[in-house]
Image (cartoon, rainbow, N blue to C red; front, side):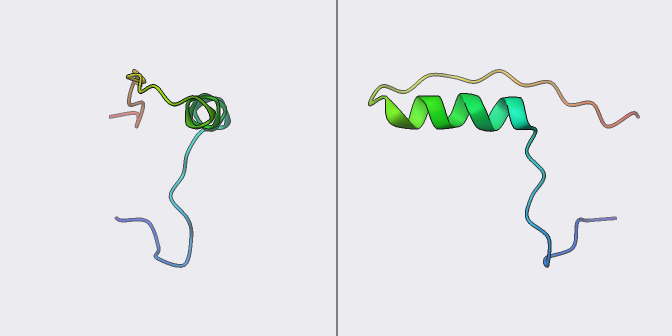
Length: 39
């Protein structure tokens, strides 16, 4: 089942911190994430 359009997409807090830190810099960097959906 897909996530409701009324809700925002789920992003973990530690990833948001990394993204915000990278947005303040002008250089781009790859963020490695691991899916954990329990399947």
